[in-house]
Length: 468
Ligand code: 5AD
Ligand code: SF4
Image (cartoon, rainbow, N blue to C red):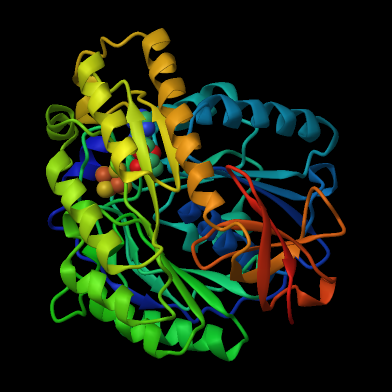
């Protein structure tokens, strides 16, 4: 058993990254078996789950949405979102129950929480019925781990990141919109954030591999890609003679894919060249997710964010001036250690000024092993909750105001499926990532259609199709 070690994860300068072009021959030795996959957390995790699904399907397993029906259960965990810990161990309770009647059930745990030694220790002590634990650096070992498992707990989590794998057998959820990783890990080390430890240092994929993947997606009928990374605009900085992010974006645009999104950008690496590339290419969508985290210079410094409130606002001004109708979204943390009421007021001021289309808002919570966890967390939970509520009220106000600008407008929507709430409708997204429920026949699913917006709410729009 190999437990991850955050201190090891920090000593990573000498760790060489190899680019491995997988061409394993995998037999469908588990045909007839079913898998149930539960995913928590961010887009990165969702896309990792598409890799896990692809690897399981290569072995012959088929997907089931009913856990009771499955032979393999995999839990892809998140270390950031609220209650991640409770949710995961709550879910394990259900798994234990199922295993009492299904002795051969294989239970696997992976993702960011698996990278935390304390979580592995808790599994060893309290949940030894788990079969496989693997981390974010070795998803590629899943097939072997599964086949060699002898129904005993087997922990295989590495502190230090491994290689960059190509030819990954993704089983994508959608046939029209695809996540495409452009880099793994993060080198920014914001003081509150566990990601540089759980996902390792930044490793960019080679641009040619990314472009080839997008070309193949286009050839297979995909209309949209979202380029994925913790810090996409730092793309290529870890490689010699590699394209910059704006150059990569231009090359992806040149493939002719209809719509390109990218997340997440760090304000620090957001250059004028990048703004120009977005402005000059119709297939790069006017959508920028630009985490603010705090609007106060002192807190930003403690967070290690490397920009000031003024610099951030200057950048937003430039983005808005150059990219017409841009949709701006953000991430904000309230109650960072030592945050005073007037420092929090600076955050509200930025939100009032930027008028974001939407925001993910978080109450600060310490992550063991990060520098901020050693700072005195002197903001009470009540104050944190109160700040979150006040922040959300303003965020929601602007979400509605921004959405109301769409009233009676005609917008293009990529239709992804039947609407969950109303089966007579379909749902999709605008080129600014707004969710729209549309009155339209089902045969438009998978197409980009023109929609006239008839009603605007804070979190979605309603519309009717005006042509096919
Ligand atoms: N506490 C609260 N929020 C956090 N985030 C990251 N780490 C923490 C933490 N320790 C938030 C940040 C980041 C988003 C993905 O999660 O806002 O951008
Ligand atoms: Fe975490 Fe900061 Fe990296 Fe984002 S940029 S993943 S917040 S360390």
